[in-house]
Image 1 (cartoon, rainbow, N blue to C red):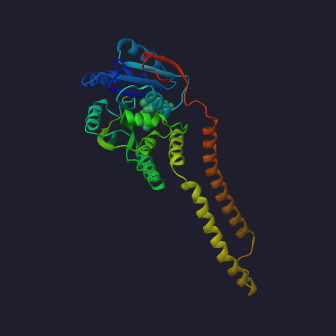
Image 2: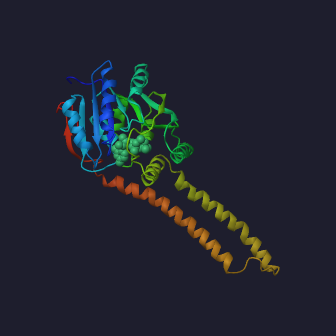
Image 3: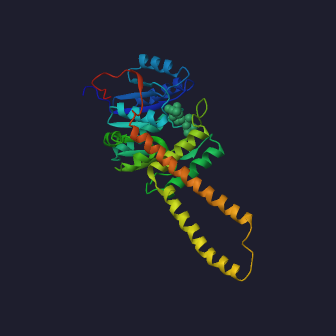
Length: 318
Ligand code: UDP
Ligand code: MG
């Protein structure tokens, strides 16, 4: 393939008009210093602000810039997926647009890749300018998922990582709709190493992950790698059945001796409410899995592209 870039940098973009000029300035300076040709793939995930206009402008000015624009918002994970599907580089870096992950760390990731690693994840040694709530929920989530799965997702890593072409090709075979990329990139295996960095404050704008999206993201992560929530129903079943098994003879004996300790509506009502509640919770958990199965079997396309800029047909693969 002619002019195949050595490095591809993939950036998902959702309403980031305030950061795009600075993102490009710092990214371009970093790319200039690399030892090989590079491409910068900016994926517009249905932004409602002027992000696409700014991206078009960049593509005109900088020949390394390529733009993929979705027909609507498909989500962060799909934007990353589309970028990786279209990346031609030998090494592909995924990085957020908000400059929380400094582009200047990329040469360090490349160094580790050259040292033989096939997947280099960037580990946050410190997180600046994030709320206590965000840090707490994030660390709780990483520990929860570690306890529920066999997957060794390195604690405190996000989607900022470098992947060798082999890893990218492996991930391209994963067709899941509810994709949890940071889990999948561990699941594929290969030689993985971590590089630590200090996570910065968002350059401008606000987080595009409100609590609702965060919860959905976390449930996707758990349901796509673990059956533990489903198995909890079995455990709870055994506990309650065991309790009943012990309670039945005790109550029978007490009754036979004339005690009326376990009578009355309140006892009945409480146990019915408790068990009804527990059953509904597990029904909901089954529903989470069922809904995801339904989404998968529908086999809809993962994302729809309305516009591509800067890709020449030889490199295009979608
Ligand atoms: N993002 C996206 N689609 C979305 C939400 C976010 O492409 O639906 C992008 C966003 O523009 C940013 C990255 O994903 O480049 C991470 O989002 P954000 O920084 O808001 O998340 P946080 O760092 O707060 O977890
Ligand atoms: Mg961010």
